[in-house]
Length: 332
Image (cartoon, rainbow, N blue to C red):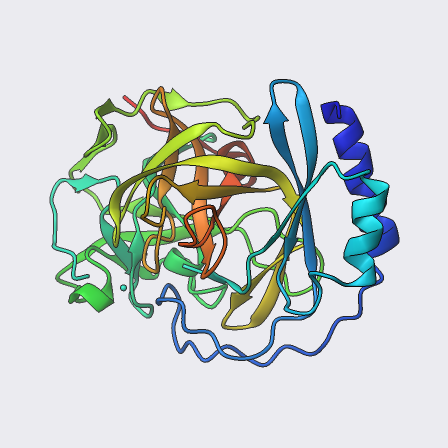
């Protein structure tokens, strides 16, 4: 089907099938601090996420991502399959959680290093940005990496490496929390993002993409089609490559310390070969396309799914992140 038809079908199925699905109470996550490996306990509410995937050039289908066992062959899925007239890609992905391999202290600061708020474990330094209203250089990563899921305060210490990797305050302080997009317990979230202002005199390298064959070339398109090849540098899995398999994914529930949070308009990525695209501790990684243009910010992943069975990665479109934080990407 055409892209506009796929978008219309997604909207109709969300309103008529997905929204009415019963929602159960979520048990609080067992994670004591943010950015830990995937070890969430508690039940994920019955849910189905809907997105769009491409079969061939110009031919799209509805992507259905089942997060609860028992829904795969449910009447709800049957309804979606019939309404889509078979033009549907249904996959069970299981639990999706926010996304520690020791990481070293590194100066100058670079994309992909271990970093974190002084009260979390560790995540990844995504990129360097500048305030659109003027000001100094800031570090970009996730809210749950830099702002401890809304619990942090303006001016809190950001460490490199992160505390899990033996980062200590004040010896390893490199920045202070500047601002973050609050994570909402009710209603859809679009981004998991925060920025921290570099300490005076802190050296940084805004362009090197170790292992990806060159320098960061800037910000890429706000639209990512299915099958777009991508790569990232993360704290845990270092350099990995993969491809976009679904875009405009709505109603994705992600496990956080505060419970399961809903995300809309997300990107789904699977790793190449037999390796996962990301693992716990890679949260905050900058995702780039084949031209090394930045396109997304990694924030979560699943245990299951993908053609290699190694799980799927979820990311916020970078344009939405930059807009929400009122910053621009630094790539020179």
